[in-house]
Length: 345
Image (cartoon, rainbow, N blue to C red; front, side, top):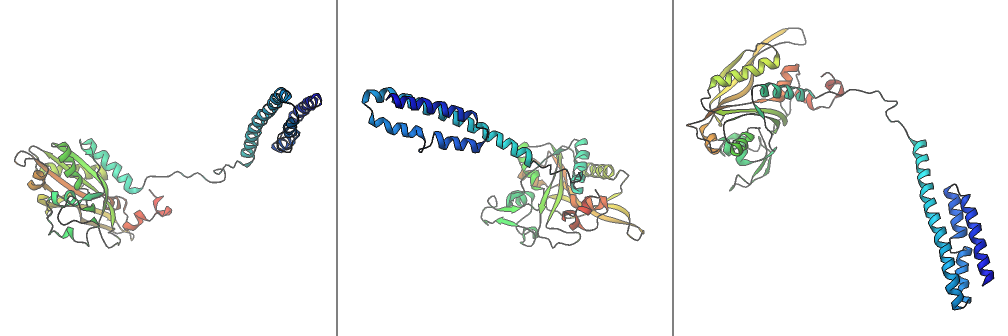
Protein backbone atom coordinates (compact mmCIF):
# COMPACT_ATOMS: atom_id res chain seq x y z
CA UNK A 1 0.00 0.00 0.00
CA UNK A 2 2.86 2.34 0.85
CA UNK A 3 4.22 2.07 -2.67
CA UNK A 4 0.78 2.99 -4.08
CA UNK A 5 0.57 5.99 -1.74
CA UNK A 6 3.95 7.22 -2.96
CA UNK A 7 2.91 6.77 -6.57
CA UNK A 8 -0.27 8.80 -5.99
CA UNK A 9 1.75 11.61 -4.36
CA UNK A 10 4.21 11.64 -7.24
CA UNK A 11 1.33 11.65 -9.71
CA UNK A 12 -0.28 14.60 -7.92
CA UNK A 13 2.96 16.63 -8.00
CA UNK A 14 3.53 15.81 -11.67
CA UNK A 15 -0.05 16.84 -12.53
CA UNK A 16 0.32 20.18 -10.72
CA UNK A 17 3.55 20.95 -12.55
CA UNK A 18 1.95 20.09 -15.90
CA UNK A 19 -1.14 22.17 -15.11
CA UNK A 20 0.96 25.29 -14.44
CA UNK A 21 2.39 25.03 -17.96
CA UNK A 22 -1.01 24.90 -19.70
CA UNK A 23 -1.64 28.10 -21.68
CA UNK A 24 -3.90 26.97 -24.54
CA UNK A 25 -6.90 24.75 -25.15
CA UNK A 26 -4.68 22.27 -26.98
CA UNK A 27 -2.37 22.05 -23.96
CA UNK A 28 -5.38 21.58 -21.72
CA UNK A 29 -6.64 18.70 -23.85
CA UNK A 30 -3.22 16.99 -23.58
CA UNK A 31 -3.37 17.51 -19.81
CA UNK A 32 -6.84 15.92 -19.62
CA UNK A 33 -5.76 12.88 -21.64
CA UNK A 34 -2.67 12.36 -19.50
CA UNK A 35 -4.12 12.96 -16.02
CA UNK A 36 -7.94 12.62 -16.06
CA UNK A 37 -9.02 10.33 -18.89
CA UNK A 38 -9.84 6.63 -18.55
CA UNK A 39 -6.35 5.83 -19.83
CA UNK A 40 -4.65 7.99 -17.21
CA UNK A 41 -2.56 6.74 -14.30
CA UNK A 42 -5.15 8.10 -11.88
CA UNK A 43 -7.77 5.75 -13.28
CA UNK A 44 -5.27 2.89 -12.93
CA UNK A 45 -4.91 3.69 -9.21
CA UNK A 46 -8.65 3.18 -8.74
CA UNK A 47 -8.43 -0.20 -10.41
CA UNK A 48 -5.62 -1.24 -8.06
CA UNK A 49 -7.77 -0.55 -4.99
CA UNK A 50 -9.51 -3.90 -5.48
CA UNK A 51 -6.28 -5.65 -4.54
CA UNK A 52 -6.11 -3.93 -1.14
CA UNK A 53 -7.81 -4.84 2.12
CA UNK A 54 -11.01 -3.12 3.21
CA UNK A 55 -9.14 -1.00 5.77
CA UNK A 56 -6.61 0.09 3.13
CA UNK A 57 -9.40 0.87 0.68
CA UNK A 58 -11.12 3.12 3.24
CA UNK A 59 -7.88 4.98 3.84
CA UNK A 60 -6.53 5.35 0.31
CA UNK A 61 -9.79 5.52 -1.71
CA UNK A 62 -10.92 8.95 -0.42
CA UNK A 63 -7.41 10.32 -0.93
CA UNK A 64 -7.43 9.31 -4.63
CA UNK A 65 -10.94 10.76 -5.08
CA UNK A 66 -9.79 14.06 -3.50
CA UNK A 67 -6.88 14.21 -5.97
CA UNK A 68 -9.28 13.50 -8.86
CA UNK A 69 -11.76 16.17 -7.68
CA UNK A 70 -9.03 18.78 -7.28
CA UNK A 71 -7.64 18.14 -10.77
CA UNK A 72 -11.15 18.11 -12.33
CA UNK A 73 -12.13 21.44 -10.76
CA UNK A 74 -8.87 23.00 -11.90
CA UNK A 75 -9.39 21.62 -15.41
CA UNK A 76 -12.94 22.98 -15.70
CA UNK A 77 -12.01 26.44 -14.43
CA UNK A 78 -9.02 26.63 -16.76
CA UNK A 79 -11.18 25.48 -19.66
CA UNK A 80 -13.67 28.35 -19.11
CA UNK A 81 -10.87 30.91 -18.94
CA UNK A 82 -9.13 29.65 -22.08
CA UNK A 83 -12.39 29.45 -24.07
CA UNK A 84 -13.26 33.05 -23.18
CA UNK A 85 -9.75 34.14 -24.08
CA UNK A 86 -9.94 32.34 -27.43
CA UNK A 87 -13.35 33.89 -28.21
CA UNK A 88 -12.13 37.41 -27.36
CA UNK A 89 -9.10 36.94 -29.61
CA UNK A 90 -11.25 35.66 -32.46
CA UNK A 91 -13.72 38.55 -32.17
CA UNK A 92 -10.85 41.05 -32.13
CA UNK A 93 -9.19 39.54 -35.20
CA UNK A 94 -12.38 38.90 -37.21
CA UNK A 95 -14.20 42.20 -36.44
CA UNK A 96 -15.13 44.17 -39.54
CA UNK A 97 -16.54 47.69 -39.65
CA UNK A 98 -19.29 47.13 -42.22
CA UNK A 99 -19.95 50.88 -42.47
CA UNK A 100 -16.34 51.90 -43.05
CA UNK A 101 -16.37 51.73 -46.84
CA UNK A 102 -19.99 52.77 -47.43
CA UNK A 103 -21.10 56.42 -47.74
CA UNK A 104 -23.65 57.52 -45.19
CA UNK A 105 -26.86 58.71 -46.80
CA UNK A 106 -29.51 60.58 -44.88
CA UNK A 107 -33.03 59.30 -45.49
CA UNK A 108 -36.21 61.33 -45.81
CA UNK A 109 -39.92 60.92 -45.22
CA UNK A 110 -42.05 59.67 -48.10
CA UNK A 111 -43.89 62.55 -49.85
CA UNK A 112 -47.27 61.15 -48.77
CA UNK A 113 -46.03 60.99 -45.16
CA UNK A 114 -44.83 64.59 -45.40
CA UNK A 115 -48.25 65.76 -46.62
CA UNK A 116 -50.02 63.71 -43.94
CA UNK A 117 -47.87 65.24 -41.22
CA UNK A 118 -48.61 68.76 -42.48
CA UNK A 119 -52.36 68.04 -42.74
CA UNK A 120 -52.36 66.74 -39.17
CA UNK A 121 -50.54 69.86 -37.96
CA UNK A 122 -53.10 72.13 -39.67
CA UNK A 123 -56.13 70.31 -38.31
CA UNK A 124 -54.79 69.91 -34.78
CA UNK A 125 -54.21 73.68 -34.76
CA UNK A 126 -57.97 73.99 -35.41
CA UNK A 127 -58.80 71.68 -32.50
CA UNK A 128 -59.29 68.44 -34.46
CA UNK A 129 -58.29 65.08 -33.01
CA UNK A 130 -56.26 62.53 -35.02
CA UNK A 131 -58.07 59.17 -34.90
CA UNK A 132 -57.16 55.75 -36.30
CA UNK A 133 -59.18 52.60 -36.99
CA UNK A 134 -58.94 49.06 -38.42
CA UNK A 135 -58.17 48.52 -42.10
CA UNK A 136 -60.20 45.29 -42.12
CA UNK A 137 -63.72 46.51 -41.34
CA UNK A 138 -67.14 45.00 -40.83
CA UNK A 139 -69.70 45.52 -43.57
CA UNK A 140 -71.89 47.37 -41.08
CA UNK A 141 -69.27 49.97 -40.16
CA UNK A 142 -68.02 50.38 -43.73
CA UNK A 143 -71.44 50.54 -45.44
CA UNK A 144 -74.70 50.06 -43.51
CA UNK A 145 -74.01 52.54 -40.70
CA UNK A 146 -73.01 55.14 -43.29
CA UNK A 147 -76.40 54.93 -44.98
CA UNK A 148 -75.02 52.92 -47.91
CA UNK A 149 -77.65 50.25 -48.67
CA UNK A 150 -76.86 46.84 -50.08
CA UNK A 151 -78.11 48.00 -53.50
CA UNK A 152 -75.47 50.74 -53.71
CA UNK A 153 -72.78 50.24 -56.42
CA UNK A 154 -70.04 50.42 -53.77
CA UNK A 155 -71.11 46.93 -52.69
CA UNK A 156 -70.29 45.42 -56.08
CA UNK A 157 -67.36 43.03 -56.31
CA UNK A 158 -65.55 45.25 -58.82
CA UNK A 159 -65.28 48.03 -56.19
CA UNK A 160 -64.62 46.11 -53.01
CA UNK A 161 -62.24 43.49 -51.60
CA UNK A 162 -64.42 41.21 -49.47
CA UNK A 163 -62.68 39.07 -46.86
CA UNK A 164 -65.75 37.23 -45.58
CA UNK A 165 -69.37 37.45 -46.68
CA UNK A 166 -72.47 36.54 -44.69
CA UNK A 167 -75.61 37.91 -46.32
CA UNK A 168 -77.68 37.42 -43.17
CA UNK A 169 -75.46 39.39 -40.77
CA UNK A 170 -73.51 42.50 -41.93
CA UNK A 171 -71.76 42.66 -38.54
CA UNK A 172 -69.97 39.38 -39.36
CA UNK A 173 -68.85 40.33 -42.87
CA UNK A 174 -65.30 41.57 -43.33
CA UNK A 175 -64.02 43.91 -46.02
CA UNK A 176 -60.87 45.88 -46.70
CA UNK A 177 -62.15 49.36 -45.90
CA UNK A 178 -63.01 51.41 -48.96
CA UNK A 179 -62.75 54.71 -47.04
CA UNK A 180 -61.73 55.90 -43.59
CA UNK A 181 -65.31 57.14 -43.03
CA UNK A 182 -66.02 53.95 -41.07
CA UNK A 183 -63.93 55.35 -38.21
CA UNK A 184 -66.42 58.20 -37.67
CA UNK A 185 -69.03 55.57 -36.80
CA UNK A 186 -66.72 53.92 -34.26
CA UNK A 187 -65.73 57.25 -32.74
CA UNK A 188 -69.28 58.55 -32.26
CA UNK A 189 -70.52 55.22 -30.89
CA UNK A 190 -67.64 54.96 -28.41
CA UNK A 191 -67.25 58.60 -27.30
CA UNK A 192 -70.48 60.28 -28.36
CA UNK A 193 -70.71 63.92 -29.48
CA UNK A 194 -69.58 66.63 -29.85
CA UNK A 195 -66.68 65.34 -31.94
CA UNK A 196 -64.06 67.03 -34.07
CA UNK A 197 -61.65 64.64 -35.80
CA UNK A 198 -59.74 63.59 -38.91
CA UNK A 199 -58.81 60.06 -39.91
CA UNK A 200 -55.80 59.69 -42.22
CA UNK A 201 -55.17 56.14 -43.38
CA UNK A 202 -54.85 53.50 -46.06
CA UNK A 203 -57.89 52.34 -48.02
CA UNK A 204 -58.52 49.70 -50.69
CA UNK A 205 -60.60 49.62 -53.86
CA UNK A 206 -60.53 47.22 -56.78
CA UNK A 207 -59.37 49.86 -59.27
CA UNK A 208 -57.62 49.44 -62.60
CA UNK A 209 -54.13 50.83 -61.96
CA UNK A 210 -53.14 53.75 -64.17
CA UNK A 211 -51.48 57.16 -63.79
CA UNK A 212 -54.19 58.48 -61.46
CA UNK A 213 -55.68 55.33 -59.87
CA UNK A 214 -54.36 52.58 -57.63
CA UNK A 215 -55.96 49.75 -55.69
CA UNK A 216 -54.29 50.99 -52.50
CA UNK A 217 -54.06 54.65 -51.59
CA UNK A 218 -54.30 57.03 -48.63
CA UNK A 219 -57.29 59.10 -47.65
CA UNK A 220 -58.27 61.66 -45.01
CA UNK A 221 -61.75 61.62 -43.52
CA UNK A 222 -62.92 64.65 -41.56
CA UNK A 223 -65.88 64.95 -39.20
CA UNK A 224 -67.27 67.70 -36.98
CA UNK A 225 -70.54 67.20 -35.10
CA UNK A 226 -71.86 69.73 -32.60
CA UNK A 227 -74.82 72.02 -32.06
CA UNK A 228 -75.48 74.66 -34.74
CA UNK A 229 -72.98 73.41 -37.36
CA UNK A 230 -73.63 74.59 -40.95
CA UNK A 231 -72.08 74.54 -44.44
CA UNK A 232 -70.35 77.82 -43.59
CA UNK A 233 -68.23 75.95 -41.02
CA UNK A 234 -67.38 73.31 -43.63
CA UNK A 235 -66.31 75.88 -46.22
CA UNK A 236 -64.20 77.82 -43.72
CA UNK A 237 -62.46 74.64 -42.53
CA UNK A 238 -61.57 73.42 -46.03
CA UNK A 239 -60.44 76.87 -47.18
CA UNK A 240 -58.25 77.25 -44.09
CA UNK A 241 -56.67 73.81 -44.58
CA UNK A 242 -55.83 74.31 -48.27
CA UNK A 243 -54.52 77.86 -47.83
CA UNK A 244 -52.26 76.73 -45.00
CA UNK A 245 -51.02 73.72 -46.96
CA UNK A 246 -50.21 75.61 -50.18
CA UNK A 247 -49.11 78.71 -48.24
CA UNK A 248 -51.24 81.02 -50.35
CA UNK A 249 -54.86 82.03 -50.84
CA UNK A 250 -56.67 79.14 -52.52
CA UNK A 251 -59.91 79.44 -54.48
CA UNK A 252 -62.49 76.72 -53.89
CA UNK A 253 -66.02 76.12 -55.13
CA UNK A 254 -68.88 73.87 -54.07
CA UNK A 255 -70.96 71.84 -56.55
CA UNK A 256 -73.91 69.57 -55.74
CA UNK A 257 -72.87 65.94 -55.41
CA UNK A 258 -74.34 62.69 -54.14
CA UNK A 259 -72.92 60.72 -51.26
CA UNK A 260 -75.25 58.49 -49.20
CA UNK A 261 -73.81 59.52 -45.84
CA UNK A 262 -74.30 63.30 -46.30
CA UNK A 263 -77.29 65.48 -47.13
CA UNK A 264 -76.82 67.83 -48.86
CA UNK A 265 -73.78 66.39 -50.60
CA UNK A 266 -71.09 68.50 -52.25
CA UNK A 267 -68.18 68.19 -54.63
CA UNK A 268 -65.36 70.56 -53.69
CA UNK A 269 -63.10 71.88 -56.46
CA UNK A 270 -59.90 73.90 -56.15
CA UNK A 271 -58.50 76.34 -58.70
CA UNK A 272 -55.25 74.73 -59.78
CA UNK A 273 -52.44 76.61 -61.50
CA UNK A 274 -49.27 74.96 -62.73
CA UNK A 275 -46.59 74.99 -65.41
CA UNK A 276 -46.31 71.90 -67.62
CA UNK A 277 -43.13 70.34 -68.99
CA UNK A 278 -43.25 72.58 -72.04
CA UNK A 279 -43.25 75.66 -69.82
CA UNK A 280 -46.88 76.54 -70.51
CA UNK A 281 -48.99 77.82 -67.66
CA UNK A 282 -52.19 75.87 -67.04
CA UNK A 283 -55.18 76.85 -64.91
CA UNK A 284 -58.31 74.81 -64.26
CA UNK A 285 -60.82 73.74 -61.67
CA UNK A 286 -59.72 70.42 -60.18
CA UNK A 287 -62.10 68.07 -58.41
CA UNK A 288 -60.61 67.60 -54.95
CA UNK A 289 -62.99 66.09 -52.40
CA UNK A 290 -66.48 64.98 -51.51
CA UNK A 291 -68.21 66.60 -48.54
CA UNK A 292 -71.53 67.60 -47.06
CA UNK A 293 -73.68 67.73 -43.94
CA UNK A 294 -73.84 64.44 -42.04
CA UNK A 295 -76.99 62.53 -42.96
CA UNK A 296 -79.52 62.24 -40.11
CA UNK A 297 -79.59 58.44 -40.56
CA UNK A 298 -75.84 58.27 -39.87
CA UNK A 299 -76.28 60.26 -36.68
CA UNK A 300 -79.15 58.01 -35.58
CA UNK A 301 -77.08 54.87 -36.28
CA UNK A 302 -74.53 56.25 -33.81
CA UNK A 303 -77.08 57.11 -31.15
CA UNK A 304 -77.02 60.87 -31.86
CA UNK A 305 -80.20 62.94 -32.03
CA UNK A 306 -80.20 64.81 -35.41
CA UNK A 307 -82.75 67.30 -34.10
CA UNK A 308 -80.21 68.48 -31.54
CA UNK A 309 -76.89 67.97 -33.33
CA UNK A 310 -75.66 68.60 -36.85
CA UNK A 311 -72.28 68.24 -38.48
CA UNK A 312 -70.22 68.10 -41.62
CA UNK A 313 -68.00 65.41 -43.09
CA UNK A 314 -65.48 65.40 -45.90
CA UNK A 315 -63.04 63.01 -47.48
CA UNK A 316 -60.13 63.51 -49.84
CA UNK A 317 -57.30 61.47 -51.25
CA UNK A 318 -54.07 62.10 -49.38
CA UNK A 319 -52.17 60.48 -52.23
CA UNK A 320 -53.87 62.75 -54.77
CA UNK A 321 -53.11 65.79 -52.63
CA UNK A 322 -49.43 64.83 -52.55
CA UNK A 323 -49.46 64.59 -56.36
CA UNK A 324 -51.01 68.06 -56.64
CA UNK A 325 -48.68 69.60 -54.08
CA UNK A 326 -45.47 68.20 -55.59
CA UNK A 327 -46.55 68.18 -59.25
CA UNK A 328 -46.37 64.39 -59.58
CA UNK A 329 -48.14 63.17 -62.71
CA UNK A 330 -48.12 59.39 -62.13
CA UNK A 331 -49.46 57.86 -58.90
CA UNK A 332 -47.44 54.71 -59.49
CA UNK A 333 -44.22 56.60 -58.82
CA UNK A 334 -45.25 57.11 -55.20
CA UNK A 335 -45.18 53.37 -54.54
CA UNK A 336 -42.39 52.41 -56.93
CA UNK A 337 -39.58 52.52 -54.33
CA UNK A 338 -37.39 54.15 -56.97
CA UNK A 339 -34.57 55.83 -55.11
CA UNK A 340 -33.91 58.49 -57.77
CA UNK A 341 -37.56 59.57 -57.56
CA UNK A 342 -38.03 59.47 -53.77
CA UNK A 343 -34.71 61.23 -53.12
CA UNK A 344 -36.19 64.43 -54.60
CA UNK A 345 -38.35 64.87 -51.50
